[in-house]
Image 1 (tube, rainbow, N blue to C red):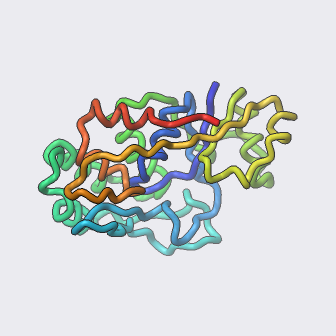
Image 2 (cartoon, rainbow, N blue to C red; image 1 turned 30 degrees about the vertical axis):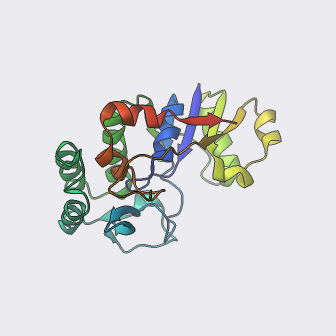
Length: 229
């Protein structure tokens, strides 16, 4: 079984969904500390030819609290207004806008559950199928941190194969996973370009950008364009 364990992010970029595409089981790592100025509650879209940052309103953000201990305000209609300004002329805006409206207004105040619902719904739109779990609901030693926590979660799930984002190579020691009889690999997203409004491609934007400019069939192809190393 191939397992991926990642913090839930707010409308993350295509590479995040490539991790989901590669997984049999995807675990939302929601019982770790919130990281300010990261991707848990913010991401970027294309507005006026440039990357424009959007933020999800989170109450009393603290790096001393876990992700699943935070709550949100999901009555901020300005996010939908910004989406419309950015993408009203995009070829698939009419297809995507109703989904975005449902996700933004979803009646859940817990940050972890709100983001998980968002991510699972987008996976369904993209045609990605895997099992979803929350690390906070799995049995484990709460004192275990970092790499040891990931290995413990993998053992709990009886997984044979752990896949992580390529940027996390410095966090893990292959020997430690090998000793636990777990194969460790990293995903290398190919991040193909697609047609946006202009001739200059702006990369590393939210998955929303890819959804606005690509059909479901094209998105399914983009989600599978990566290498496992």
